[in-house]
Length: 610
Image (cartoon, rainbow, N blue to C red):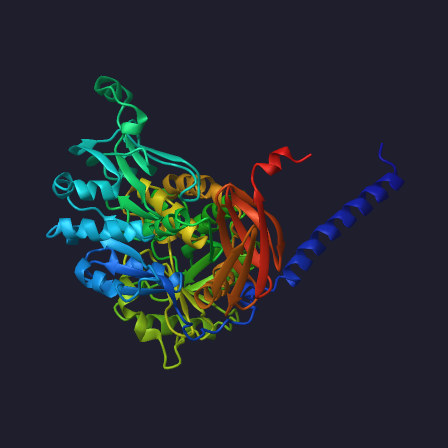
């Protein structure tokens, strides 16, 4: 029988546990400052006047502005603060070169432009390279043109022109060129065939032994055996040929179109020097679009697809899944919500739901952004004004520092900007996220007050070209902005759009493919904005004397992030900052002063040091 004394003790313990449990919940609620954007509490870095560009080793773009390559190469020159001159013919560029013999700009050449006078072009380019110049054929001349010119073949390092078109079994991107390690892109035995989007049929050029290959196409083992071929005979895709003291790079395919060219150009520049040192953003973002649904606008479809209401789906399925996927690789989420997802919705939004999610977000250090425009918005300015008024009427004091604009609404974004370069309806917005566009810069100034950070990847898919672009952007910028489109889930057009089908892909993609870039910092969109502003404002210069590199930074506010790439050397000491390894031969520097010095030592010493 339970004694009175034991009963009293048990009841006392029960009451104590109950009080502790309730008080912890009360305290958690009391201290949840959900109406504060902790990511946007730092001072905004203002845009600085365009600094002087570097004339030495500037860029000569030889091609037309409408050839599909111009925009990204101009973007790259801007990021590297290099002069960028455009010539529509090699003749015009060569004439200008006569006045810049000591500067030796890098020549970006469209091979199609030299086909009319290939003998003259090959001769002049050969002379330029032998004198120490760097030439990059971002598009090769035609197979017929190359086959018909021995001088051009010699310039490109081609010893044998084999076939006009050969079908590849796989493509290999070797390590040490782009960040992310060696990657094999196979064309055979791939279950998700829609992910195979690289060119499979290419001209076959057998390059000479004095060249260096960075990306190569391979035939199947059976075909190699039947033809009596070795790996050295495989079709080259990206390679370098040296002549005199200069270099020629060749790209066999359309790999220099779009943002993938940024990292490829930096990798080529690195291959021509004994080290490379350049600013990067150092920010990895996870942008969730259209979450949560505050208006319950597609309830019938949610019941049919998921057997639950929209509120239940968002709260009990989507939110836990997003947090779990982000936590696995330490991602920071920025969630861009809209009071109403569609202008056509007759339903009214729910303030209680917004406050509830702001609390959830605050507990997980998620930043909340606002959508600038809705689905099927005919008048984006009117839609955004309605969003502002609703939030104001609800007495929500949260500072929305990040905005998101849908691709269909981008052409109306100017209607939201006031005379001071700010978003009229939300003056706290300092950065805008847009969907990925090949003809737009990844990061840029949208106005003097607001930056643009375009998405770089779709969390639900990772094709071969997506892989190459990821490696390239991490190499060039140390930057990514992964887009998780919840609109697609809440407005599914087929079973492929349902959460159970895309969630697994999202979790696997953001965990697997970004793992090689773990050295770069995970950020919210406002934290990233500060680094983007610094990157766009700042510039660096460096000189080397022996094993010591002296670094001078300019126009950075606070820390500057630089990528150092070496050939067979590792950092020994660094004054004025700190460093960490990204991968072998590549190091991320965080400089805390305008002047810094880093000393290098041979990599092999690390293995023999006692």
